[in-house]
Image 1: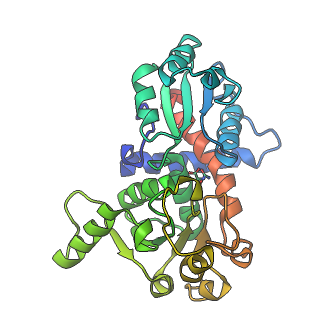
Image 2: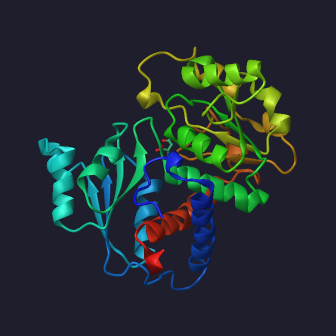
Length: 320
Ligand code: NCD
């Protein structure tokens, strides 16, 4: 087993599948009256959150507690970070307290990688800047597999603000490893230039560009809906936008928002995903978000099982 989970690229197909299979076992615990396993008794998990979060923070906390670990929640607000303490000094404090795992969310891309150099325990990236969010990709993969029965060969369309999305980046890496075909859709300003050029190069050479995930880029949502098994809508991340990336919210919704009419162009079995939090009415309408195709609430439930599996396996539960 790997020691840290920092990127979707840390996972080969066998390791990712092992995590998903373990998560399926963990899910059976959630159905019991006593939702607890003794697997991590006596181990300490620190949740280190430098950025706002609702579901990810609560999900990691629930996961660690269900495995009987001691959980310390640390948020930058109200700690010495507000007094200017550096990430390194905070890491040394955690180290001195004997943290077995540190779950970190940070606005700076790469912060979890630095942290991993300073602590002896396992580091789990719970979202770093616009970079990666590997446990979100795992819970998304888990949700697709449980709804559609497989990942290999699935057509997954990721729509919207790909540029600022750590969810999209981790999903592209993990889904390609697991054999799904990913299509990125959004306004050209919100598709990372390197991915757009790579996809174009792969297209003209008739094959996958060397060492790059097998992705396609398309700017027309309506064109790809009829062949999508999964549509993953992304939040428009205004807080990370330093520029004007599209003319107006209305125009964005018109071209890239998923409404009921567009949803009906999907094949009957197709599912609609969103990592949350949603901008209802912008990238997704309430009709779609609350429809039977939507897996949004299920994704949150699955998140706990997947994070239980990650903590359990990284911390060597049963000498994994
Ligand atoms: C995402 C995140 O924080 O990266 N949300 C999440 O973890 N559930 C996506 C987002 O903020 O849009």
